[in-house]
Length: 393
Image (cartoon, rainbow, N blue to C red; front, side, top):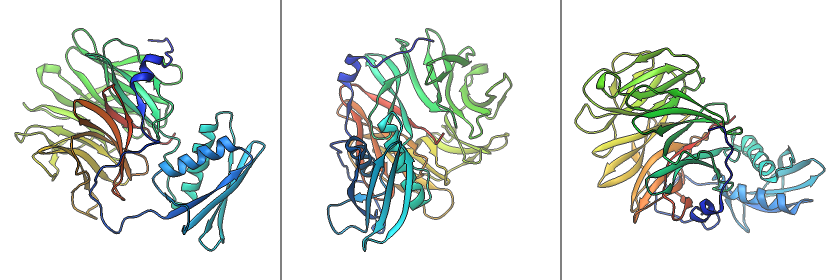
């Protein structure tokens, strides 16, 4: 478990990055939602960096790049260990300038530069420096944990368990994940430090240990255990051994996720007869069922601005969003063939990554819940499932 693993050529052959030739599907949207148009006028001094910055501007999802008639223009220059970028309006008036460091890894430098533009223009934490974890089927019946950049590039294999490693979830503010590892008899919850590949077991009780989700402050883990022969929702101290049972009934619970404030947990339960979403206080108490679309609701993900994305059964499975702030009712955001499952919010509270099962294969898609665009992130011969979008470190 302490061994570092490299991406093998065989693995790379069965995963393809689809960010360059984005495949769009029909997504439900409001007509008022659109991106500002941007014309990229090049950045001088470092052609490779300039190309990477242009790619990030295209795939960050906050601009529509055009060749003429743009509302905004970007120019700039790279010199020494710094790149300077200027954003101007359609009349050529400079709106602001950002300076960003040029690191040895030019992809990292491009990500940071575009994130700086997004923060200045939209007052958001940009997603270019984030990563996405997922489970990929390396052999029939075997899955390992991988990560990739927000655009599907830079794929890394993190585990080599020759078993089932699934349900990755990022630990807030750290370059580390938790995941579920299927052993011969039971399942364990494992913590994995990404840079070192060092791992340790966090929960290995007899029976089921699964669905780990770490609280926003990093101190508490929500998880599903089958202690006392009942599948229930628990919380456990991340650093210690203390744990508390939050549910206690004959139903089956699954897939917990935390509210942005860390005071509530959304989870799935079938106590109404079908899988539905419930919210419970993280200290315990009565749970409340959420209003959702479709006949079933599973795999919730809670955004930083208080929206819950989930997979809703309406014939097949589709992605739906419930705005808990009351600004808009629950809505379905995907209307396309296949089963759309396991959504995970980006830290910009706008984009979600999810798995799409179609024709026997499962691939990853990024959905823009504002503009209605969806693009394939990763696909190929390998079945890819259960994505998790990292936060901002």
